[in-house]
Image (cartoon, rainbow, N blue to C red; front, side, top):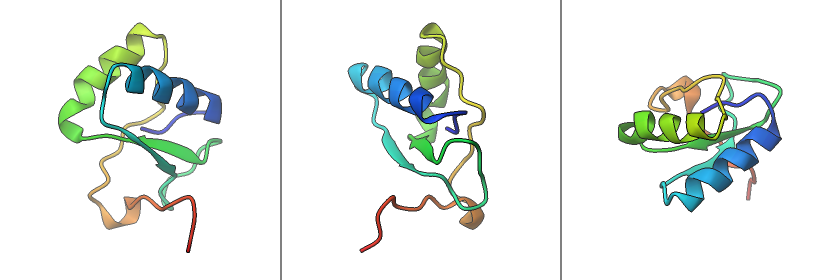
Length: 80
């Protein structure tokens, strides 16, 4: 999920973790940019329920993008 700003990512992460959803906060894919450099990765099977959970908290992602495309591969925040 792509959000408008980092505070939305942090808030969404907190809500989803409290509901025990399996998520990861990652760097934005190279092909997609918004004002926020973070995205939330989750299993696609959970999309509808995760979006419902966020809607109840009045949080709306800008976009939900599948990560199986090579152009949308997520990158780590840190390089070793």
